Length: 311
Ligand code: NAP
Image (cartoon, rainbow, N blue to C red; front, side):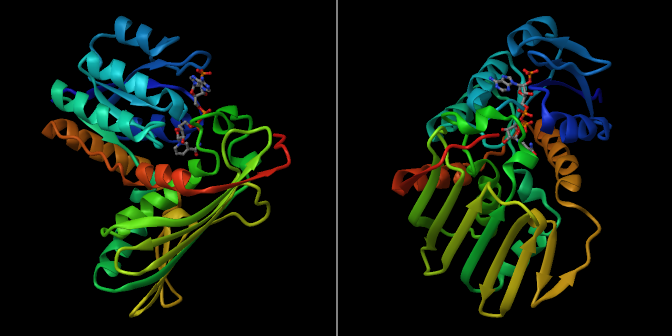
């Protein structure tokens, strides 16, 4: 079978760090083109926009969308209209209704829509899901604190409407929770901290509760210098579990489960294996719950305006 020919849209940090090497490492896939306003990828046909790429490289089978989230919906719609399979980076869209519409368009076009949550592929997450399925969750505490200047230097889109602010990384934690907690849970209280020169929050304190009474607390903070923390602590009826390093490491009752993988390292090869598998089966995979959770949090939250953010 010929490899799936992929066109990459938005050649920025995640495209270079993860998508390009992961496509190169998968024998069933080949990077055939790229569309970016400024950046180029060596060895493939480069175009200044997705429109130009779809026009100039009609033999592409699939498109991987890695632009900021404000552009995801239009790009995915264009690609589906041209009969391409679509891999859509997180956060999938800036509205839940847009995502639902893309699901409909993919179905009508008989094409794969794979909307990715990379943290769901972190090495500790599948094992934690198996363990939690046999326990009763009493409480979960998310601590997702990182230095935005270190991880997102100069990314103005994060602070603009639809840019998600601290929910850009925070939605990764929520995507782990939706994977591990199959039952319903809802926001109870939320406070968003918004710099006076930004449209999106730089920090958030969240309280959520599950339908069967488990409490979930989350502290998200983009202002955190020093040791960077992406942890989720679970209290269960059979003792504690902890996911740390963004889901890469798992400990049970305080004892670390050995793993040699770092968070992002194993996630993207797994994402592209899944994409190839979905295309072969002509299936889609979209988990809207993390986006719905963010939308509900934004609906219920109080806002605190703070000093301007300077990059
Ligand atoms: P980024 O470094 O800013 O890259 C995005 C690229 O999209 C830019 O370099 C830019 O390339 C292109 N682009 C097209 N239109 C743009 C516009 N109006 N404004 C800004 N850039 C535009 O962002 P990223 O960190 O790669 O993130 C991209 C997506 O991946 C986001 O949805 C993010 O949540 C997700 N993601 C990021 C990470 C991470 O660690 N950074 C991890 C997982 C997922 P041109 O200037 O050449 O057009």
